[in-house]
Image (tube, rainbow, N blue to C red; front, side, top):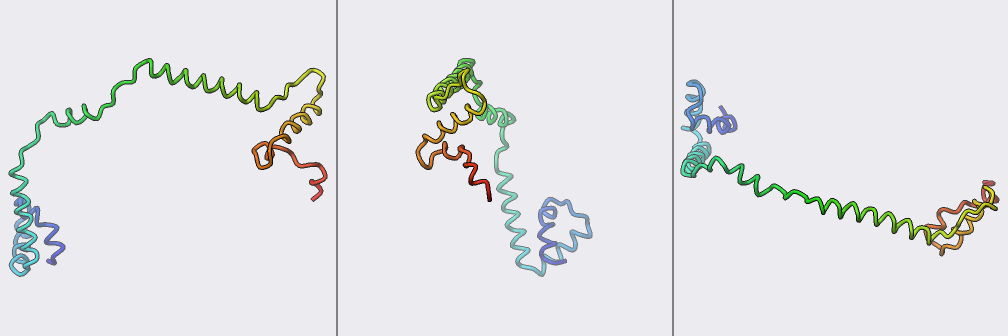
Length: 143
């Protein structure tokens, strides 16, 4: 048996869980291998340390979960969130109306409406988002 196989079985060896044949093989290897004997001694000290620790009380899980639980949201927080959302939509709509002052009137036909919108977008400064929305001139489509 090699060191890796023995070290995999040392915990079971300490706990007395190995069958007789495996226990005999581990003991033979331990007589010849100082590294595995040192590993066994270390596991033995660790086992004794764990035996000295006090067992946690049964309500540890409950106490930890109580600390982790978030307080419930009150109704006014939900109402404030909804009101903020509505206010944002209303203000956004009002500001968008100021950015695009185009008003469709009964005198404009469909073709005139498109031309009027293009004029509004052409008034934006160079490099703004408004220039990205303008369609290229018909002469540029020959390529």
